[in-house]
Image 1: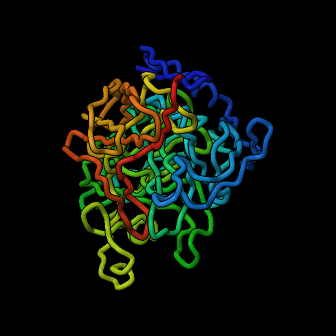
Image 2: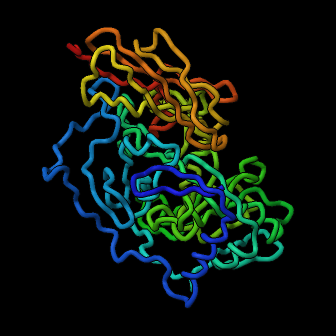
Length: 442
């Protein structure tokens, strides 16, 4: 099963062997030339309808008028459609709301999040190698051709979501990129199983974790020894068996800004573990205590990772590394941008997902959550994929309505109607609401 996305963003599935895509990559590798290079990663400012983008308020939290996306300007980077910029060093770009009507996010619209400012803008595949080393029987240096020809290709549909997605909703506010809801995307990733690479090198007794490192470099937080971005997974974590090293994204080579030439795909877990421009895999004998594991991306060891600023300031909170994504759902349309005629049937549509297993139920409410009705679920592309939902709603009166949506996954996890607070701004999954206005039709 292969996936293609046309220029308009429509998702099309076609039965293919997958050989054409790998042959295409191999053809580009031939000759030892640079396969993919971007002359520069400097954005060009975008305008809408010839008008400069209007400045928006800096806060999008629950007690203000909540914008679905963050409030940055639209910019254009190489290989990307206009996206919403949070920062340019490191690059943080958010996906606009309209791209989430389909179950798969187009590569050109996929959000971007780097942690360090010196990111690769060209990679020569004649020189690049994926090094698998550490506490192993034999180290390997694998070329792209080796990955595609020596190991069985596998594909998985998986949601990649920044740990800080929806951080702008937090009260009190916390440091970090003030994302709206668009720091996420779903793609069909193709590559090789991490387990197959580990089996090929022979993991020795006494190993505890696998560490991953990419090509990005930079200063990072001052004094933290964080000039390279290092993340690790425990060898006993079941996700090791599902993790892949991906060289394709939606049937195409990875965009440079999304991790070309290969990136780690860790289904169900937040994107902090999805190392981009992956170049080193190391088997460790001791727990990884580098800054990006021991200090960054940690959450309170409490239900839902919830705490208070007072408890944090008083040192009462045990912090642990962030893990799987909680169940979430979103209303994509209607978006409240225009009035709806009274008595007109409206198609309410959106997406849902969970890092704990497939979404099995989505419920919709038109009265702010007092009454719920089941929505119809779209095609199931796998337990870690977006699941679209749709329902028809007929407003019977004029005035303001508050639409709501909540999802339940296969483990019985249902979205709560309470927010969460922690110092990192992580794990937000409160029920989403959308105000809409209905006008008279006569």
